[in-house]
Length: 540
Image 1 (cartoon, rainbow, N blue to C red):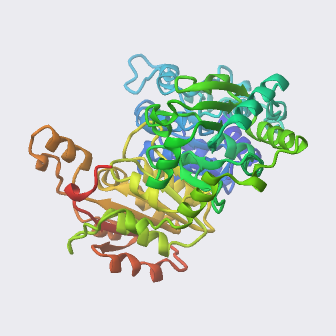
Image 2: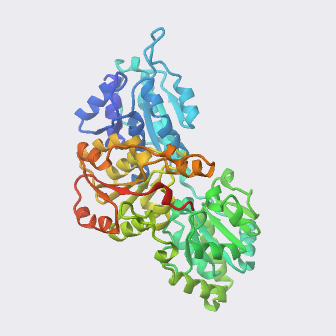
């Protein structure tokens, strides 16, 4: 069997039923064989788009995906999306290829250095007989290390004859063991929690991954404590009477008031980043217990307290069990702060937290997001690009940790649409909503052709202020003309229709609400161009 056929067959036998990528000299033969074997190949417009789609697919499906690009520029085109995927701890394999050993080959690139630049792993196949084993090893490493792996299969190997053998799925059972808390550290954590007057139980993405939600609610009710989440764990405590929502720069005013007076934060699987802690301000003067399976993720820069190397679910369960054995049930004697907070949260009305700045030609972004939240189906996946716009949907839309992803890990705009397309392929049974700014949207809109070709149930919401809005605001602060940051884009609705999608423009609440009837049974992408005014968007 030739190596190019071996690659295609190995991917299929490992259950990789979707392959993202862009054909070129290095990969066209095994992609063609993969298609011949009834695999699903999703060709992108650009290699960066292919990596972004594979990233979104991997995050949304929980499966290590696979993406393939060709030599040299095919790899350099992936670097921004690949860096985002690494920092988001996404798991997939990127098939690449060393160029033929020709002197001064124009597409030569040091692939190991490219991988190191992004933080991705790298495996180079040195003998044709090793190809099959290295494919399996690449997926194993990607799952364990929770990062993309570049698998370099030199193009000169594709014509080599090798013996085929049954592919073994990568075994990772040993790495799935969840570490429990050290008994002495557990006692210390309990002491801090029980002596706190106004504690907060904070869940991060690590708590979501470990399934710690129910145990954390038990713990919060036993103490009692208010609950809160990081952005990536949004919705874990939804419905709890003392749920503050998102902790950090996105917190609503009532939550910030309580956080300011809290004396203890019990953080489970949360990295306590600059955004979560507001540069440490939200933790100053508080005792912090931070639990994480990764010792290097425990961040003691903020506040004083205790680091616990343990699984979030294991620690929360152990703490709740110990409180139960000790007969500690704070919920039966709810302190005055808890009753007051419950009443405050129950009476919260987001519409009263701002003054609408709609003009007739443009709609206030906060009004648009609240109305959009009213019409979106309960079962939906939300994927967000980043930019000045993003804090409003992140704060005002209902987000669910297992159905929400963003491209803010590297801080690059323009990656959101590709990520959303990959997520929509993984979750084609429900609506996927892509939130993009006009700058990032223009960078990635060519990939809308992929969504149209695949007839994906995808809603693309362009928050369109016809400018690089952050730059406009900063230019004004510097005493310079903010109009230098404005842009003359083509109309997004016209572009979307040219690419095979449906489209509409929203300048008012009524325009947003009218979208509801269009979302029922959506069988191809729909783009909504929401017209905003760059200078009227609050600088919150």
